[in-house]
Structure formats: structure tokens, C-alpha cells
Length: 211
Picture (tube, rainbow, N blue to C red):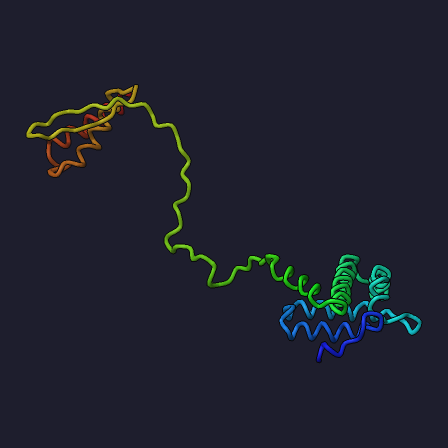
């Protein structure tokens, strides 16, 4: 549509405003999304105009508040949506009527809208989702307990060898006999059928029987 053929200020109708919105979109004054939103709002409020109502743009602008409330009741819509439509129609018709009087003034609205920073909703995509490193699950938590009090000792065996062991606060000969049996099994030449090993075992049994 050639915007030069649009009506004069007092003669322009809502239909003329719709055609103008489309023309401004084609000229790059508004984005496609903005054009769609403004057209939707204009269609919504114009739908409640009856035969007795004027469809002139300036009169519709003057009755925006009434029209958006009528639309909300008719469609059982929430007030927030109706109010959004009302603000959109008020803005659209206001800029349109201003453009009819002086296109340069209307251009300032387009430039201001373009200069405002747009809010970009954070939308996680598959490519943006960080990959977690693969690996075995962490070990289960282990309950901590207080370590028993021991007295560390070292017994030299000669030839640079030694045995390091810890003694509890209470240590008896019976404990010694049991420990001797246990330690004997770590000897590389351990043989329970030999006399020495049998003596160790016998000592443990004797200590146990007299305990």
C-alpha cells in the first residue's frame, strides 16, 4: 500500500490504521513481531465496535479504555491481556495520527523503539548445556570414628629390619599369646608341625585356659 494515499487526520479510520501498520512493517519501521502484535490488538478492540460506534481512529483512541474492558467481558479474558491490548492500540493510533500530521515526528517513535535494549530470555539449548565429566560415582560417605589411643613402638630385628607396632593402654600376657600366634603366620618359614611353632600355639592355649 502506498502510504501517501492514506486519509487525513480527521477522516482516518481503524482500517486505515491497520493498512498503515502493515506498510510501516514493510518499510522496516517495526519488526514482524511488533506488526503482528499491533494488528492483533487493533482487531481485538475493533471487534467490539457496533454499528452506532464511530470507527474513526481519533475517536477509537479516545475510547480505548472502554473498548479494552468491553473486549475483556465479551471474551471472558483476563484483565492483563485486555490492558496490554489497550496500551498497544493507544500507542499505535497515537503514532499513526501523529504520522498523518508530521511523518518526521512519528519517525522519532520508531527510532526510540529501536534504541531500547530488548530483553532476551535465557533459553538453554542442547548445544549450550555443559557436559558433565564422565567417571565413577564418588565413594559413599564414611562415618568418622575416634581412633583408639595406642602407644607406637619399634622393635629392631637386626640387619636393618624392625617391627613397628602399637600397644593399647591395657595389654596382657594373654593378649601377647594371641598376638604371637597371629604374627607367626606372617613368617615366611612358618610350619605349624615344627616344634617352635607348636610351642607358640601351646603357649596361646595355656594362656587362654588360665585366663
